[in-house]
Image: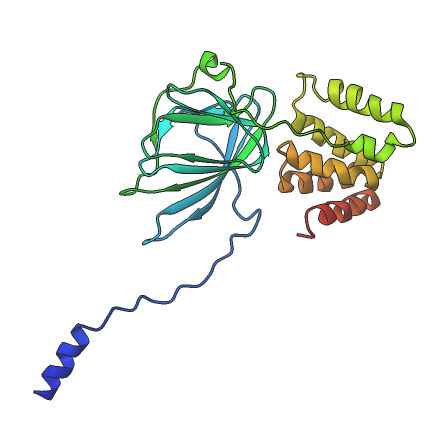
Length: 267
């Protein structure tokens, strides 16, 4: 009788799940993959970061869109959250206006809402995409976004006007050479950097390469930051510096690595 009592008591004890360890997905350990052409227009790369194991349902990926690239129309059974990390992009739900999204913006897409998202026509954009799976499915793909739909006017919610602060050129040169600051802002960044023949991302790579080759660490520091804002990834910067070591010299590349590590938090 005592054995039967012990057996029945064991049956009602709570089942303790095996302990799970924290895991860290290291930056660069998940190589980006080309986004499938049947679901995207233009060039986009997807880096899968987290595929949660049951009972969790969330998945996370980083998606980098070249300028003009976008998803097809699609829905998510449990919705999706986007967090913009670089560049300028667009998002639109069916029947609604196109909204511009920028670094730091978070976009919540409700379940089963037909929508698309991607870069702007002029600039690339990178975002994190967090979704949940329902019965193994996270997305239902629909038709492609036409050029006419993509190039429709952008409508943003009005924001309070904020007086602009001094530009970096004004901070560096304004008190001593205001004309140089004016030329830097209006001609270099206002005209040359805005020309459509090269994307801001490509211009950043060209500028970083030139500054590494000339061993200009002070200027390189600010342009590494600008490159990240324009959609250049940490891995691309590292590969550019490695490539340049063979053409610009080892000391220049080593100096560039020090600057990049300083800007990127020594990672």
